[in-house]
Image (cartoon, rainbow, N blue to C red; front, top):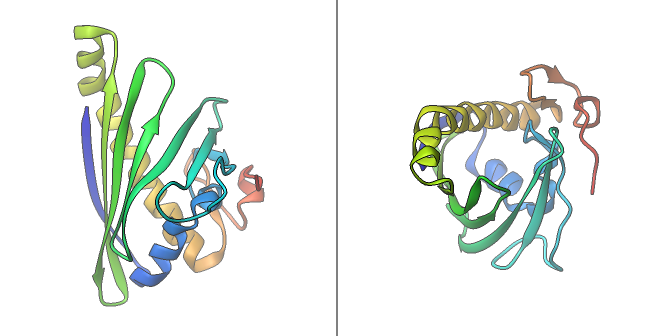
Length: 166
């Protein structure tokens, strides 16, 4: 399954890059992530590895595989069933005081033909909705220090949204 979404974030690209490049800090703005402990010694760059722990008690492991400094971060994904794994790229395009952020997600779904049907009918639209809310929350975080939770509610801090540091 491949999903792609581009959305404008009303913040300079340097601020957006700093948020995405803080590999252990995604819990501060990602609506579904409550913790993101590092699994590597490095917090940025190729080889940085984190486990994103979600509000529904599931998790995925993301590892940086390539950096295009200030422009893109590529990562591999290790996910629970029915997903077999995948890859993702976050690309930034500066637009003056704003940034166009493109998130590309490629996930391999198991379960044969049923998995293919599930991914196209259910997972792809859900993934786009989640990426859109994540980018809204990122913008909210960069402006206020707050976080939007998985229900779309704005909070004054990540902790108020239920997130905790690793």
